[in-house]
Image (cartoon, rainbow, N blue to C red; front, side, top):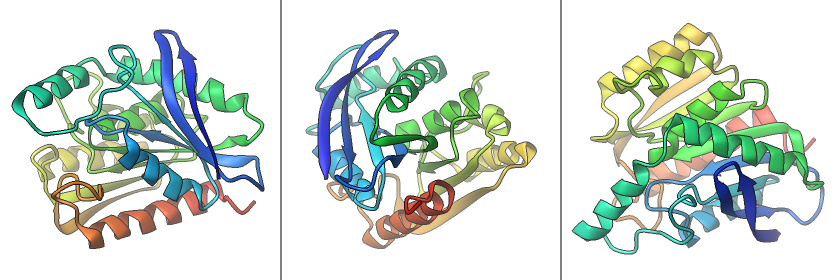
Length: 245
C-alpha cells in the first residue's frame, strides 16, 4: 500500500488530506471518504486503509481546513464538543460542492486513480455531503453510501431529502436503530426523495445499533453492525466501481 499526506488546493485554501491506494494494479477506482464530525484522525485513516486494500484509491480530506488543519475530538468534554459543533456549522452544501470539485480535479490528475470510476462514502455529519456531492456532480459518481447520516431531512432549501431526486447514481443508506440525528420520519422523507429520482437505492436499518456504531474506538461500537456495513460497502463499490477491472 502507498500512502500520501498532502494538500489539495481548493477555492478556499489548502485542504490537507490522506490518500491511500494499492502499490500495484492501477489506476484504481476512487472512493472519496468524507469524515465524520470528530475530524480526520488515525481511526479514519485505518478505515480508509481497509477499503483501499481491496483495490481502491481512497481520498480522505480534512473538511475543517478552512478553520484548522489538525482538529479531532480527543475527549468528549463540554468545551471540546462545543468546538466541534462550531466547526460543523461552517460546512454546508456550498462548501461540499467546493471541496468535491477540488477532490475531483485532484483525482483527475493522478496516474494511480481512475477518474471514470468514482464513489463516495460519508459517516454521520457527512451523510448529507455525499448526497450533495452526487447531486452537484451527477455525471461523476457511480455510487454513494451514507452511514448513519445525520440531518438528512431539514427545513433548509438544500436539505438532502429535497436534493436526493437529483442523484443519478446508485446509493446506499445504513441507519442505526437508535439515532437522535436521524429519525425514522426523516429517513422516510429521504427515501421519498430517492424514489422520486428513480435511481437504484437502498435504505437499511441496523437492529441493536446506535449512532456511530461503525467506529471501533467509539463506546457505541457494534461489531456485527460494523462488519455488515463493510460487507455492504464492498458489495456496492465492487458492483459499481469494479476494482478488478
